[in-house]
Amino acid sequence: MASSTTSPSSFAVVVTLAILVVFTGSSSAQLSTSFYSKRCPKVFSTVQSVVKHAISVEARLGASLLRLHFHDCFVNGCDGSILLDDTSSFKGEKTAGPNNRSVRGFKVVDDIKAAVEKECPGVVSCADILAIAARDSVVTLGGPNWDVKVGRRDSKTASFSAANNIGVNIPPPTFSATQLINRFKAKGLSAKDMVALSGAHTIGQARCLSFRDHIYNDSNIDSSFAKTRRSQCPKNTDGRKVLAPLDLQTPTHFDNKYYKNLLSKKGLLHSDQQLYNGGSTDSLVKTYSNNGETFFKDFVTAMIKMGDIDPLTGSSGEIRKNCGKPN
Ligand code: HEM
Ligand SMILES: *[C@@H]1O[C@H](CO)[C@@H](O)[C@H](O)[C@H]1NC(C)=O
Ligand SMILES: *[C@@H]1O[C@H](CO)[C@@H](O)[C@H](O)[C@H]1NC(C)=O
Image 1: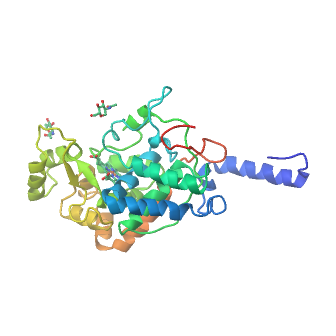
Image 2 (image 1 turned 180 degrees about the horizontal axis):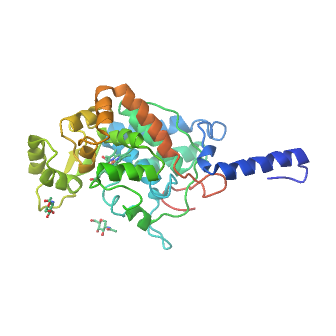
Image 3 (image 1 turned 45 degrees about the horizontal axis):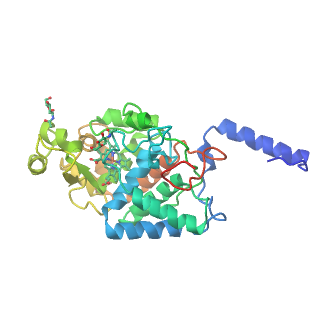
């Protein structure tokens, strides 16, 4: 960085900045909404048009894109690692328990990457594409808008074992409210962020496998809702084939009905209903069910915080040419 013509005073500025970066610790300080304004001025409109088109073909893809960003950020930070296929040197995250035959939307991400590469080759990371596509999905399905911070770089590797480690990373649907709160805390997110982010389950689908124990074994569930769900999700069949909406009312619309369902004990996942089960998060669920604006505001705050989890910046990582492969 410092050339031979660098003056002593500009050298001091560089050193001071370097020290600042080291002592503030978090490299997320380097993410900004304007990172691409010169490098790729049309990146946001380019991503948005591909996302909108995908959702017009299949609304659920909006949910799938939002979830990809979450599962990316909760495993070694928001570094695009979830997008990598297995290579000879590592087994990736795609087939780990929480992801295998469940996460989707990879084709849309590849389409976005192709469109963005055409616009500005080698500039925009796949990790940023996930963050932008998550926001565009929420907006397209009727949710709140916000400015996405960008400047993340892509990992050169991915970890099957980290993605599989439900003891540290992606929380399973069997978790209690306390476990959910602790897991999000460990990722730098508050209990409030956790409750607001769970509102993402206002869109999308879950496999029978993911909610079977809740509809057969739990007592904090509306009995006619449980009966309906059981009829489609028999105890002994392949629980990966049948899907049910996470929000039984409006699964392709981003609204606060998810919380209203929890008040009537119609949460689909065990972990969903845990948020309204006589504990400390009940009051927030009530607030969000009564006030969609408050939910939107807190959801946006929490999404920005989630997008700040351990990004690669500066000269770490790379800008992948193909989101599925290291360069
Ligand atoms: C609080 C802890 C969470 C747990 C235990 C959890 C668990 C799950 C499970 C089990 C599914 C269904 C997977 C399947 O059966 O294929 C699911 C789907 C989904 N999750 Fe979560 N999740 C959590 C938080 C989040 C967060 C923070 C987001 C995003 C901000 C999110 C977004 C989604 C979306 C959009 C879907 C539907 C995806 C689709 O239809 O393709 N979830 N989640
Ligand atoms: C992922 O799912 C496929 C299809 O069910 C299965 O064959 C494969 O063994 C699973 N992979 C892992 C790593 O569990
Ligand atoms: C419900 O609980 C029983 C007894 O603990 C257990 O054997 C079963 O696997 C659980 N799940 C379902 C879907 O019945």
